[in-house]
Image (cartoon, rainbow, N blue to C red; front, top):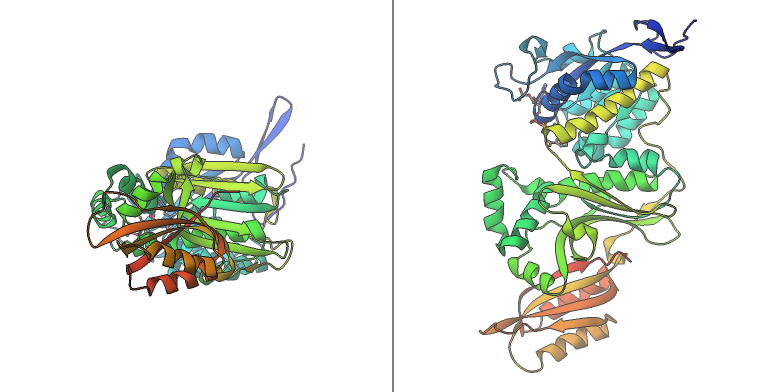
Length: 460
Ligand SMILES: NC(=O)c1ccc[n+]([C@@H]2O[C@H](COP(=O)([O-])OP(=O)(O)OC[C@H]3O[C@@H](n4cnc5c(N)ncnc54)[C@H](OP(=O)(O)O)[C@@H]3O)[C@@H](O)[C@H]2O)c1
């Protein structure tokens, strides 16, 4: 029986056909070039050593690591990559005609972009875990993949081992995604979890997290919300069919969250999480895409996602609510997602169906990211006020004049001193209106320091 192979490697692959139970198995060998032999690159190599036979038998193909590019040949590595595979010149890997498939695992937005573009230009499919690069140059890279008739795969770029990209692209292909909420940065979730459990302040927990290797030095990319914004932007783009530039994502980090906010939120039945929020605002394709600390009701499943774990809660118009939970980073979890992409790439090479699932498919309509000032939220507001009669009335008057309803007020007892905390829970108002009201409130002589405003999400 003849087997017809199509696709760019049809001429190169070794075909061994064997009759088994009346079926024919066609095997091909795909040579992989890995650029980057650090946490993720080393993890991918080790995972292929561990589960390569299983992986190959599921794919009906053999994947073979041919070269691995690194920066420093002398570096001690926490993986089993043989020295003989290493090179310091990524071009030796990408331009090797025997390398069919490239995994870009170095990070950054300069050399990584050059590597991916060079590989795509050669018609070689690329797997990447690089959310910063996709976020900044996604459209250019997707266009290049299309132009050169190949593909770019990026499951590992969002939430480490959680297959959320595949879920949005394939599992939920028949759904409109009305809302998506993600705890997508493990460092922030680790810090907020410890602050809650220990009643500790942000600075102390961050310093300890850095000592333990759970936070980078400097930590800005994580704790100021930018990493979460890259990931949220990618998820929002897939959910809504137009590519979202990171500059369009409203970002607030967790630096200003105090032990006091966590304590009062807890007394009100909430947990503070850094949430990526993607919410369809109306029927006009306008979408909220933001990252900010959020009060999550303790009864909601996202409130119990602790430590470095990630979770994404998706609300589709047909599927309803779905939750994805798992490790958002780390050698093995991330390698699992890279292997998923390698599997897709191998199958696409094997079957010659490279356009089965293009890297990004614009769909539905030309959407737009709504400015945060027009987004409607509920709020937790903590003020520090002079402890004297009439202050509460003055503040309530400003909220009233702004048409912002107050759902509850708490003046906790046991705070002696010149100023005391005063907490408001506010009903729905646009972010513009709430910010304006708080500006006026901050100017009152009885209000000391800057008001703290944290949005509340009730997942309605
Ligand atoms: N770590 C995670 O848990 C995780 C999770 C999801 C996504 N990611 C993404 O995965 C990517 C890699 O992250 P990582 O944590 O594995 O980083 P990493 O541990 O710092 O490893 C980077 C690797 O790239 C190599 N490299 C850097 N510049 C190079 C160049 N110009 N030519 C050749 N090799 C070069 C380094 O070589 P040397 O070893 O010689 O220095 C190192 O092996 C990033 O895009 C990151 O955002 C990481």
